[in-house]
Image (cartoon, rainbow, N blue to C red; front, top):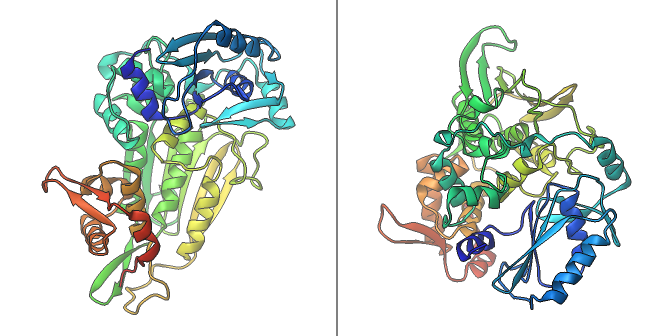
Length: 457
């Protein structure tokens, strides 16, 4: 451990393999939670605000921590490291899961240690010996295929400064082993050619004439890293579906045929939760005249079923999910399906359904055709794009127009119009030269957000 690595970790914040604690209180539950998952580190002496509080690291404290680990059932293997008044507890992934502490059974889910239910414990016992795809290290990886641009883009999205070598960064993100050799998660996110190492790691998009898989009008195989797969898939859908618009006075507002936000969520779920051990199938996006299918191979993992989808979180690939969560591609774990349902309901012209039979198929079916442009005002002003811009700017130290267009899927004209409105009502400001400057919230954004109405008229 050195200062650069510590600074990076403090920027990164808590995650699947990283926990911050100010004291020993309840630390046993975090030790067993890591042992029951993929292992990880506990930084004793760091607060939830990612600030170093410091602890007195002496033999007494080290002995206490070791005793806590030994008193888990079965004992958890740990190693201890000291740096800058912080005791770093390295908890290994257990070989005799499940592990229990005095408070019960816990497992790491995203940045939290969650108490396990009886069914979770039973499933873990049955699953022993089964390797997890996303944590398998590929010893044949050639670093000539490593994409530094993809790593830099990821760190920018996560609002993390790059102040270490890439192998140390990969390890801190959970995307490699301690030697810096990428696991499958690292290959999916940061390889120039993921398909070279994972034959099925791509997305196939197709637009058909009519409502059957007969005549293909447009097709694309997207083989870049997993983030680009999501973004290029959305571009393909936009290219092959219609967009109407509403007229508000002299302004035009786009009205997509399908709810893009819901489609994006479904694509993320597909690449995140698919069964990558099944080498004979990729993620498939099929666009027909009356519907869109987004499918990925992999049955629902017990105790998931169609009734509790969107209510509980069971992740086939937790490391992949964690890296998506860090860049806010996913929000609260397990709520993606419910968000899709809510967005489709709000859209009003698309019915969402699911089929599960070895495959998971998200179906978006048009219930009515896209109408002609509407010239009268809608009953409620649509504020979602402008809210998303505010949310994006508030989550970053610096964000420019290009990033807003790219990440929110807006046209240049739409983004420019909304940014102008936000500046006019005093919510944001632009700092620096035109080409290299950035947007940020004004000094008292909370007061502004409370007192200003974000109306588009």
